[in-house]
Length: 408
Image 1: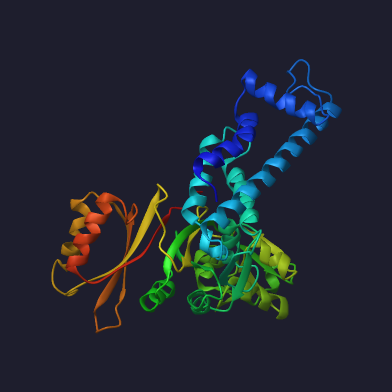
Image 2: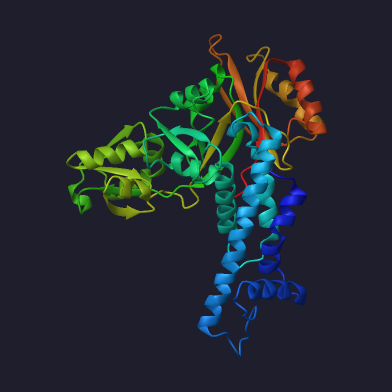
């Protein structure tokens, strides 16, 4: 990647054409269009709109400019990668914190008409393609194809990565630990059903770090080979999806058996292969497994969102808007006030704690560890002071990761 200043300079013609209305900006676009043979006005007026042929000529000219700028960006990104690690591979110069900065800059520049979500998606794909020029990143996820975790992979890394579908969350951790995969993506919590505890427990025995997070709105569909709800005998899906659709299932399929499986995509595969079986999954799974969508958006809450973590082997530098996840335990978790005493430095240094979860430590009966999310990066001055004080009080202290907060 290049520096923020050079990236902003490379993107300036596009930003000027899209976000500024001054005469100088319009003149620059007109001159470039004329140089490429378009020779059309930059814009018409409400009373005198441009003819369709001229609009198309202008679009062609802008497309040519965009194409050249994208290639220019790719060459700059290639040079940045070579200058950082001439003998390394892709993961060595992939910097999640830098990508977060680029996306935030894109959002700050955006004045429409494209929505922020579309701008982020476009820039994510450009960065993904630039990074994959030499060797695509390998990203492990809970498969098979068609899971929401795969969607989270593509949202965070773009479509120019090699997505490796695995059978279990344990395998995702193992592939990243062994270096077979550069990164992994695992679900950690849902806004309706809470924490996915098996993912948390896996950190107790793993040296991996958290390198990012993805927030994904989850819309569930009911799907199957049948053409009506009356023919459904059972519904297969991940236990989280079944729980997120509990109310809808109670109202519409109260007699159907509910069968938890390893993933939503596994439920879709069973719906394809078994008579009377339907599945709850994302609409992509219906396309992958050639199923009929019988009902859409059956989740009980319209704001249903799942948060995913990106697993990697390295700690990251600050991006300017970060979250830090800690693994802690007090010296005596059964004595009164032990947790309050452990976490007191966070309040003393003004650090906001956004989440805490307890899990059995597996060291002794009724002994617990705590997973804590705080605002800020471990290298921030106040956060560093708070963590130093925490470390002195804790019997177990690990920074699982300081990473950019989800951009959108």
